[in-house]
Image (tube, rainbow, N blue to C red; front, side, top):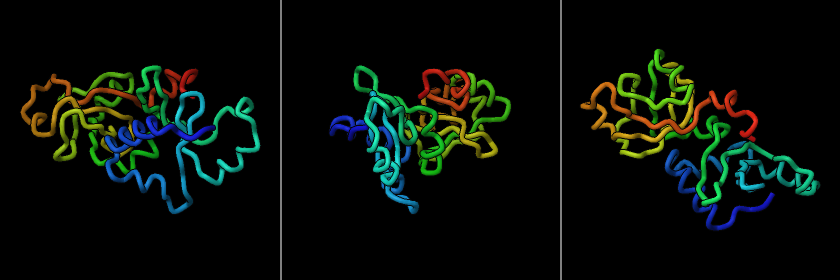
Length: 180
């Protein structure tokens, strides 16, 4: 496991700040220890520094992964968050979208969120802002990007797409072979 290059670290922290804003510091300096990001085979892992030191005993060819996979860099150097990062990012999310119970299953099958499926949305969220999607019972379901700002959502047509789907917890079943 190697350190992220400066370029990839910048891409990672820009993407993190899109979803959790200034709470990135709280993600790294936690009460239970210091955490860091490491790269292994184009995947970004979130790992405790204590566990990272223990993993240095193994060679890179014998190591599958250490920590939680946060995402993967594509060949064009773009980062796509995996659903495994959801439970670490959800508590720190600045902007949230709640989905109606009747629309949860459609979202979990990979569909975008229409205004008719929107339960609530945080105020002052801009267009193309990263959001965490919740059920009405405050269970995190996935990631998305707002297609419309909060003010545009209020006057939008019921069939208008409000939030683009990016990742959801249904991926554990649909993509279990390629997830890790």
